[in-house]
Image (tube, rainbow, N blue to C red; front, top):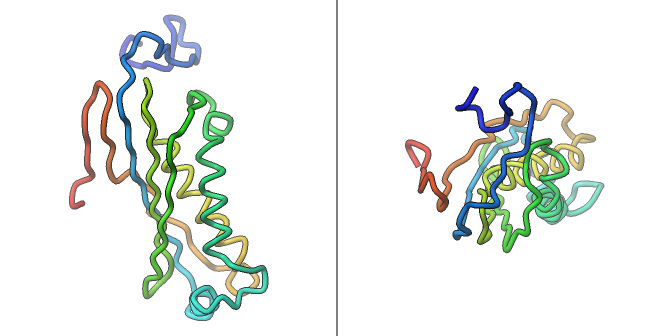
Length: 158
């Protein structure tokens, strides 16, 4: 079990000790998609969703969630994020959400970027569900990460 960093010698879950690691600039980018009906997509684009501005609400929700990732994912470290940004692209079949999280620290921000995307997508669903309950959230994934001991990584095809 030596190769499983979140388990101790007895197989019990533990938070990895990052105290001895060097603080470096770390950046992670993630994305995801929510597919929906033309009616829901048009309402989001036009700003006519009864609950209000879907994109603005999803952006704030994603940022807030990224800051609380350590509370949501059991073995994640609570991090002092330096920046979190979310971008939204209206596509023909739905909305694509991209998030970038960054800090200078001892552990990466991949989970923060993915939690930001996931929460933004769930917020879009919540706000538009009166129009389309059949929306489908998917394709949440890490696109890129930079910094740290393991170095840079980029998803193939990106």
